[in-house]
Length: 398
Image (tube, rainbow, N blue to C red; front, side, top):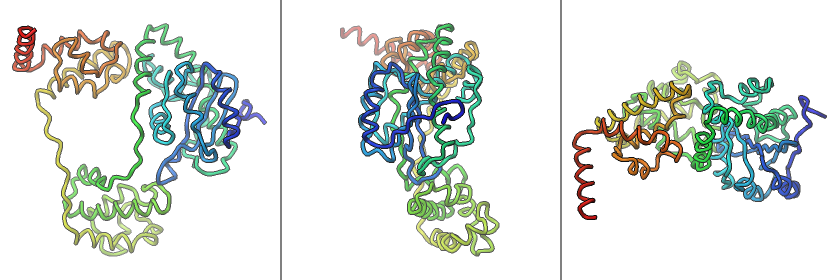
């Protein structure tokens, strides 16, 4: 039966079906890919579906029922096959983390839309803009780890890749029309090198709550007890920690240190049900935190050199002006990390900027001379003199 006018996707749920699918995919010049993970429903997130569409057919691959997904690895890594994603970064991080897959020859429709000066770049907005299709997003919070999945959930997953090849064609034409194709492909290539997603628990992670909320060291000690307890319980129940108690609730408990069940009821997030389930444990942990040795806060990051901050500010203003001229978001011009690296190292020549390796070839060619001129103009005088002396010394020795 067709779903929403589409034939149902082929459901690939065992190794034999996957082995049969791989030769078909290997012959395709273009594949659209998406993933669904269960981060809202499990303690440790994992990829639960991989959707793959050709221009003629849709497939949903089930990693939870297939023993060996490695046959897909060479397909994803094949530079002869273009892989189309929408907002690829997190998908790529998760595919690397769970299966050690790498992607080459990427086309990201969200990145292409951003480079093409579109501001509404969600998949639903772009499908409406180009194809007049309205996508039902009510399944975004589905538990993708449950089996069997409802037909409506599978339809939602299928829709995420079915139209990507056509959307890619529209956006590729738009890039070519605006003469921005090399710029976009440089960003695609950079995405292929994205780092692996990390889903490991950090026992010192409570500081990211304690420090911004100005908790005292005693309150931080209470928070530590609650934070470690919450993670252990979440792991045993296989749920995300926020489904035990939210960060906001942990902070309120640490700050107010309630002593009785009645006191707990005044804390945000401590519903009657949570008090029944966790109240006794929470009160005990607050006592433990009050009696525990005070924690040692992490070393603060050293204050940034004001000369670096000043140059970084100038570079950000340059980036903002270029973005306004081209009607794109600022990070499409140059990333914030690249600007900081330039402010920190203050390259004085085009070659030095190239050797810093923070700009791809297109950005280096397009903006390199301009950036070097800005850095030369605004770098501290002593830095310029040191650079000049070093250059003269190098010339003498040569």
